[in-house]
Length: 614
Picture 1 (cartoon, rainbow, N blue to C red):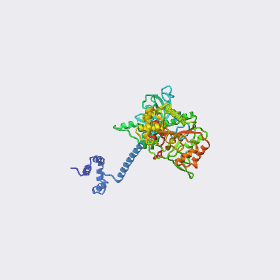
Picture 2 (picture 1 turned 180 degrees about the horizontal axis):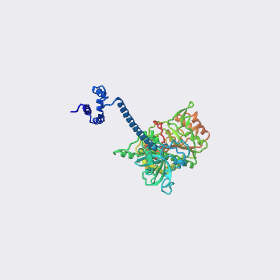
Picture 3 (picture 1 turned 90 degrees about the horizontal axis):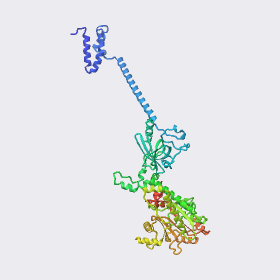
Picture 4 (picture 1 turned 120 degrees about the vertical axis):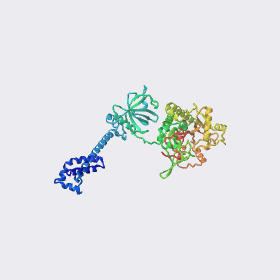
């Protein structure tokens, strides 16, 4: 048994053991805190401080081993201080990481480039969007055509040379540390450009790859690259490629386009054949294409069609200039109709009604009265006809000519025939590249023609069509589209020609200014010209006698007492040479020469009864 002297120590020990029973962890901590105090127990219990024990025994004071309020406050303060220090270090670490990330981001940030001079090029980053080109300066960069790149003797820029190229980004493929780009110029000239990660400059390479990934197809880009010899089968430039040193977007295209140029470049046969496969190609409708015509004309074949259109105008001018013609420009706002039987657009003209010219017909003839003996014009023509066919437009470009004749309108047919021969041979010889590109998507053969005019007379045409089973009645009606095609097939079979002329049309279906046939006024000295069985040109000897013109107008029920018709007739009353001419539809020539399925493909921005935009 413990002695009375040891009793407090004993009791305190028991209390300590009981106190630690709920948790062994706290038990160890409390016992360790309790032991140093044991030596003081006798003094506390029996000395002058025994009152503390009594207070403890009576429950009036804090239990032995518990913290005072001051001690608890100090412990809490220390705990909070440690927590605050821990939070401070955590925030400091987070801020440091954020600063490091911001520094890395800043190092990789791609800034816009204001390129002012090639002499200061080293100061500019080798990648980044070009700031808006606003004619700030002439940079001194010497841009080249991709067609001048190559290994041949005639190539202006050979392997090893560094060049600038501007073009449209046709395609881009970024994989890992490499990138392959196809640049397109003028719709159908392409070259490959490549970038490969530079191990000596990993950060710069990372930045370049990051920028390349932001580029979108159809964007306009500038590339400075070193020409490298290579074998590239997917581009028109197949013996070299560009190793990219610098690249800048000049005009970034939207990431979502109306359609892909690649999809619009496939032939109908290719699209049709794919429909039975697991991955059919999309079939793009005509309206979608026309609504986004600028995209449609980036298609190599469609772009080349516009160049053929331009070529025909050039060849038309060349031939007529060589044959002594003068180009004129006639009014398009006129006081009345220029073509009887054709729809006309009208507009207000300072309180009076004006018409958009349906042709330059009356003014061409008046030019002959001006003693300009041979004239031509290339200009817009307007027809307010609700013709929803594949070969009609409400606005088209007219190739018109008029010339004085000595005896017979055959003189004019000779001029027209020579002119078309010049166009046909010129296209095949001088624009063979464009034609080959077009024929990859739209199949056609060169137009065949005879050396001398292939001319049919109306009665002969009637006989041919009757033999083919057509009911031609009295033979005085105009030809239908089916009849024209059948006639074209017959001429091709008989004469081996796609290009032919048909004259002596019935007077009843020709305009008032057409000269009647001297032998039978039921017919006229008029003619149409055909390609592949479809009409491209209408012409005639004009009636230059004012009294006969008035008579013909009366037969058509047209008055000529004032306005344009009065001036037109007066020009004849003052003397005019006998003359003949023709009006040719440019878009229809393009459409038929290239074997297209719709004349709208031959118009830059076509106008028909349902379309006046874009």
